[in-house]
Image (cartoon, rainbow, N blue to C red):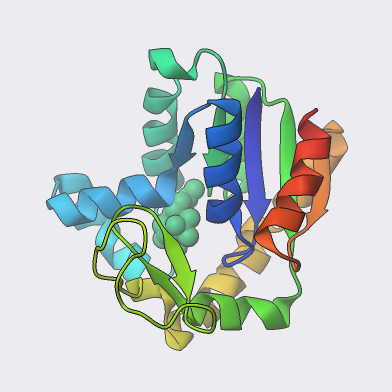
Length: 204
Ligand code: AMP
């Protein structure tokens, strides 16, 4: 099964991706994670991408298309994969169409007023766990004991720009995949588990 998770920043793509990939045994491909790992390691790609991420801008299409094209060629992607945060522009979607055929696009729909609160209250751990300050007050990860941190682009200043970028460049993908007949909406304003139950119905 080849799946795309679509949704605004803070819609819960990462949380759903973690559950789906675990349950269905397919790789989780997050272009944001790949870029952040490169920034952390100080690679040429990381140095190039950092400025875009810090501002909440999209890195150029060819950079992310290249990342995905190489990743989906790997052996573990033969049985399918889940794309999280890619594609984010019509150009990326068209490039992806040339590389492979996607089975389903799950669009996580969330009320916009919830998004700002979700993103600015989000805290991450290097192990991949995420928390929200209203439901978890410690600064230590309960899964691995790591120190929690706030993503640099999860601040109030950057979120506004990320949402604008989403509206202008990514939201048109909803129509693009609707026209292909593979888009399915789920409600992401409810709990992670309740959203996953909707996803599961679509995948079975
Ligand atoms: P994410 O973790 O998906 O929220 O992505 C964080 C940041 O990485 C975005 O704000 C962009 O700067 C960059 N990024 C991730 N995926 C893409 C993509 N498909 N196209 C362009 N930029 C991306």
